[in-house]
Length: 107
Image: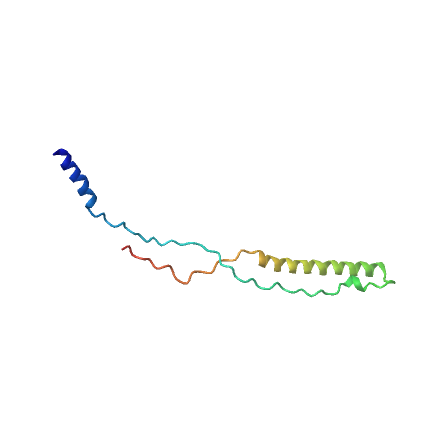
């Protein structure tokens, strides 16, 4: 008799319906890098250098004056190009999301 009761108890426990698993929706924010088109780099026109106009019969003081002017012009062009390159090196901020993700209530 014990065996029959034990067998019925085991069989009866397998017949009870199990509750459905609880599904929870948890919204998560994921940072996704978005490829943005980069602006075209600036075009720098080559300016004529003062040293290119040194005459063969120029005095030493005139040569030195034109060479100094050339150095100053080249330093200004390098500074201008470095500033343009720095604009491309700066990290870009991602565009803000238009609206937060809606939260889905649990069922």
